[in-house]
Image (cartoon, rainbow, N blue to C red; front, side, top):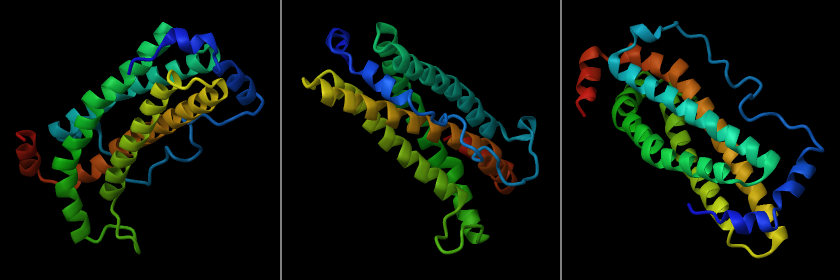
Length: 216
């Protein structure tokens, strides 16, 4: 994404957006009230996880750092408008999403999730009515992430191509809003995988099965 900093700052609509948003207090998308409280499970330490699961958790740590940097960029955009550093930060995040997060999600879908979901359905460990397992919910998140990332990226790209100042303000507002939703989805998704899904996978999938997955 190549945003035109000069054209953005010429008639910067973000300052008006900030003034409007500062009038009301909003909850941080990084701190949903009860979302980071998983159901009671047998505690499984990182050291006791299979190496494949440990590697996925290690990738989560890297991802969380990038997400936190992106949130900082959005806060800077919110407070000070566009700058070269902000634009580079936005581009860096979406490049990381394309090059790392999508690949990571695909790896989960094709290995642990595929095998674990079969077992969960066999054991009937799913939501009554929908018959959705925790794996199904994680895969739904993967799709939601793609949608939010595509919307956010395209909205940021539109900002420099819309001549009307009022329209740019609306589009920029939407870009930031969708990006915050993406951040919330990513952070909560990673937390639930680390604290709910991966412990279940470590319990139900044998070391032999997980070893075979490492070679894929």
